[in-house]
Image 1 (cartoon, rainbow, N blue to C red):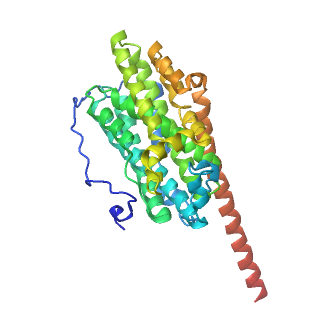
Image 2: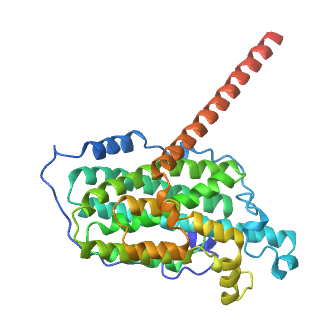
Image 3: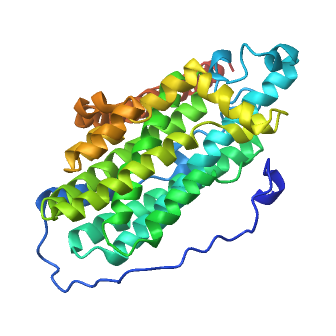
Length: 368
């Protein structure tokens, strides 16, 4: 079924064109490279996987409860709107919220694919070009998987959120080669990782948990790539150049924070926009959700050397400054371990099922 047939709202024109800026850079030195980045490139090659095979698409999903979302996670919970809803309408609300969340993941992954391809084109170092090529394939796979989940299991797609589109546009229009790293690898990917992790760790449904765990295994490498490349480069910047990047981060973080309201969903349930924004802002669950979403961004920004006074004040205003001390390496290693554990559990279960089938066949044969 064409995607346009399952959009919850009109997405507008089918193509969004962002004018390309900046130079394409070739590098004729093929043997030189940073060992840690080349090791990450090797890991990127080794860890390629097929979303058609690794994920168990036969798992059933209730479209009216795709994630097992608790009631208090929805901004309308405890309001007169919620009290007036039938159980079917509340299921419809869960469906819309899940569609909205995974649709933003889908659009963000397409943006990540385009940014990774832009990095291949514009980054001056061959080792970074090599790794970005593997990431481009990763992001294509992620977009494919999220698209399939929305089409086949939820049956509904939401247009890209205005704030996410604005940040993508700012990232792609900037001619400086490091900006796709900063906008995508640090801000958008960092926030997406935190969102993926919160849903992965709270969903009661096996299919979305599989999808998120496997995607996060890849994303852990992508964030590590951005940290390596930018940490090296940002040590060479002037104070003025560093302030420019910090201003970009501040604006991007506010955009991403304001993106996370799901106001579009509430409007589709008859809530006026201003009231929808207020309800989303007041929701205790969504307040915690918005705060925890910066658990990956803030330590990464600090690690790459963007930690000026104005940036720190912005993080104080958002209530997330203390996250700068989070252990990002530990979070990333946990993401990889969870995916590997899921694989081990699944393969062990499949092996037990195969053994049971053989045992039953032997018994049936002996009975004949």
